[in-house]
Image (cartoon, rainbow over all chains, first blue to last red; front, side, top):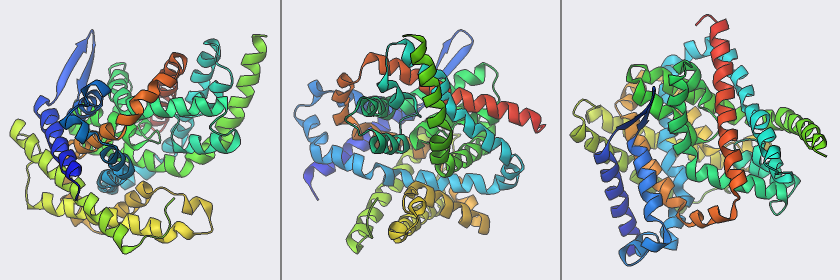
Length: 262
Length: 163
């Protein structure tokens, strides 16, 4: 085994220890309280320490090309136990979930919010073809594949979806872990927030579901099972929602919005 | 995405998964030290971690077996999905798995993952400079849009369902 890889493992253990030692922290702004979980500190620490200026000596070995490559190549495998855990959360609640199954399907349509809210803002900010890529969805693999097939990634549309992909990868989990409890404080029910958490990205869903669990530990099983079921449904239906609903809606709105400002 | 896997690849995945569940165990131990009320580490926890490892391996196996499938939808279905489905079916069939897996603290699973997620994006931080601030603002509204949209529809649906 490579020496640098051993450093990576030691580093991971240290980061986890630091993150868990910081533990749960709550920030209160007015009536809204934001709970920061250890996972937030773990991602902040690893990203902060990755800044080029710190990459000297020992840190350079940790963030070596091979180690960063290992982390990105095997990240989804490191995530697999989490996905397996979701199965155990859904199973005991399966009856209840099937009972409100149609609500799960209806809320999938909420994913069109990316077009409905994002597109007008993007056009207003002066974005044009980039906006197509940046607002089709949350910019995960599905949208990336669709845009690169239809427009190529070198096009303006492609640049839009790639930018969103990068921003989502870096800040997605962080964003949702802060945004979910804000909606909770605004009066949205935890069941609804849990269902909505299945946005189609494992880490974003985990960000949202984890803070909800931290806020309402007595509802852990409901929150996790709803989030996981909805995530699974998104992985089945997501592509169809995108191609048959999001794309036509986006084309229609885009023509309308862009014609208006000529 | 991957072709049929050779034995070497399986060994590699098995070891990576072992690392993953090992770090989960470590995290859960730490959490108990810091918050004595959190989920304790018991024999069941070990059984739970072993089940998570097993279901992940089965999911990888299924995905690899189907990677030559003629139906694009099945060929491209993510490994993550296969693992969830495998686990769901096993947990529906045997209550033991539910008990065992729930002895693994949920939040302890998330910290190691996000640690590696953070490391994995290290070399992409520079790409941020290439993205415009406009797309960054749009991203906020895109995320708000999908989440608030789904949450409001779900809230409305649950109300109609009388739940």
